[in-house]
Image (spheres, rainbow, N blue to C red):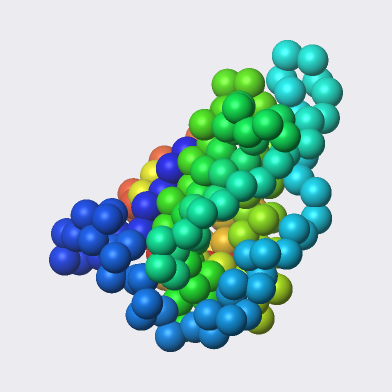
Length: 178
């Protein structure tokens, strides 16, 4: 699953990241402190063995944009997920999120959202936001508490989740927040 921040101007990901760097309007002191805080321990499940695996976090930054990676080992050799986030006004914006260990681990996407939510809370930001560009990802995010900013899409998603055979005419992608 991967979702990207996108806008109507057709900017590349690098252009969007550069545009966000230094222009978020958020309290950068609180954001920096939130990133430094370890937060709760994250876990995933190894699909083959069913064993719980502790996930280790590493981060780097580019202006206001923070790149977070989760690894299944402390030596950071086995990357299982990546995410980029940036504060935008009163929200922590998830710019990208990718479960790179999907075939081997279960729970990585949930762990990344929990990390983002901890950063959001520690920084004093009120919401998590993202732009979902995949209907499967939209369903995942919806089940994790995100809602479309368009209420009609939320109604369609509720129907789809309760009746998986339902074929919606609505494109279930777009801005979401929680």
